[in-house]
Length: 403
Image (tube, rainbow, N blue to C red; front, side, top):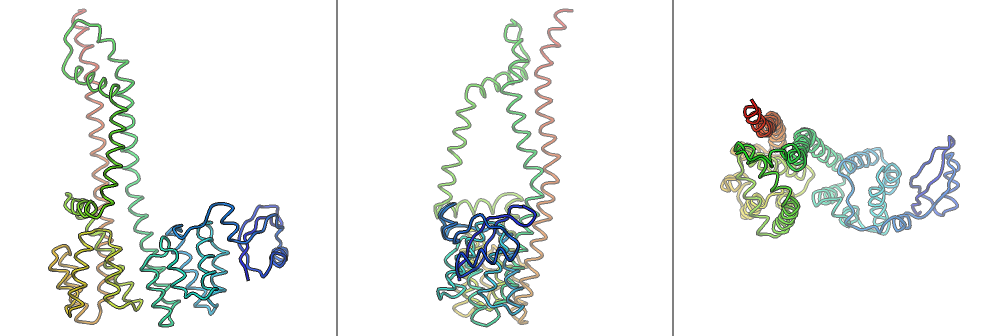
């Protein structure tokens, strides 16, 4: 049975697109007619991908839709539907074309004899090592639907946390961009026209006016060069950060930043605790779980600490003590992990830690942005006040001379 992509109209004349399983194009059209759809185009899903753009294993499905489709797949499997039929139903419900193509490719690989985990492994940009190992553990233990449900919960929590941070930062970032553009326009275009009347005066100008005219002339003369230098600097910095040494230096500096350094640290630690708990609950062995977590924390210094802890665990130590010796993990985390190891409740303890630090991330970001807004207003007010004074002071001087 092949997968076909179709375009057509429903009974109300509304355009529809989607995917359908059938043994041949003729049977596919017949199934669509029975559903009340009039087909205008029909082609195999692989041809559909080629007609739009070449499909690649590097295509990435959106994280939010991946979480939704993972939960749907878990629900279908729990209802007793076989994996192949569940994947077919999942493909029909996919909203994004890239998601349909990725899941269709996974279904094709499973049909050809690959395990579900191996089929997911062909698309590492969409399905992380965490996802693949969890599915492999679920297949081996016969609890795939429970593992997929756990994965869906994990992905949904990551999407929710990301959405909260983006929504909190959206206003100050937008305000910063708009304020910067207004300031550039004032200095580059408005100020020169207003202060141009002072250029022909044989009178000494106040220092705010001289400074403002100098800044305006500088930006008009070298503004383009400054922009190009800034773009070039960003590109070079990005290339350096992509190197192993550059990445390590960048991560070390970010952890040492005032206020933001702690924010980056607790973000990485929350990700560490959440991911490790998810893997252990899914039946992944501790050493394998630590190796996976090492790749997802997003900070080289913390990755090195986890790698050293993994080696110590391999030699017979517990988890808490090696993490404590690194000096990067807070006492709360290592203390709760030690309690979890002794009581046999490591996974619940890690869940509590991750929830606690995720809440702290949200509180910290909220606090920072609540302070950033007034600070930006004061800064812009100071700049505007300086510009107004620089313009008005010469006018007052001229009016006194006239009198």
